[in-house]
Image 1 (tube, rainbow, N blue to C red):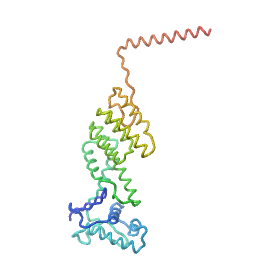
Image 2: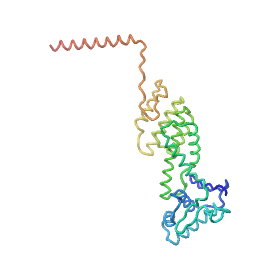
Image 3: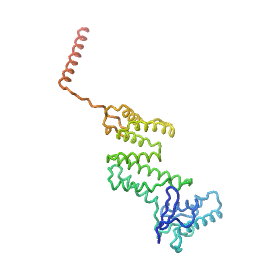
Image 4: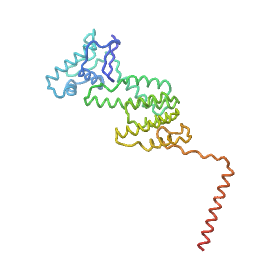
Length: 302
């Protein structure tokens, strides 16, 4: 039996053995298949599925609609497959995904990869982990079931997008820790394409651009951050972002590695003592002056 691949991230797609599905799968059939494959145990009561898909239809009309979408799924996924090998099986009042029918599902693989990323957030990633995360990022071709606006889909879509942002953030920080600035920049830019108001990524890009000797671009990123936060959220950047921008603008000969891309306070410049003996003499003279002033004040009050 040819491998069945179902892509729910971005535009819906079914392929069998690498070839496009044999029949068209209309939006409601796509939604039913997504709902089924993402549900616990891949099992749904027909009544519940009908309420989700056709909340305004009566019982008879929703049953007819259910039969139609099940037929579309069968036509697309089950060409030449015996009845007991169909992807979706009917079981009295329920429908279920065939446990004996292997399915490659992009959402499932994507979730597994992002769980691994979250479990190791505080560890410096190695090349194998970064390669795995990169492959996971390729699975995310867009929001879950693009074009579907059912409540269940919007909720799951937001969850998957959060996981994607975590993955991109992990890739950007991982490459930065390894000193690979260009890929770190690319992943941070990709994150901002998905979530333009992600302030930490704006700070990271400011820092990374500065480290690549592009202060102009770093300050342009700050201005973009100000504009996006005002437009999207109606707020100003945090104090940490403002401090980082000020440190970059000052460009007081700081080593870029001292500028904390997470927004910490820029370090004060170190004091260089070129002549320690001269410095000590100045301190002694200052103390003598203070003592003289104190004596004068003491005499004037006697």
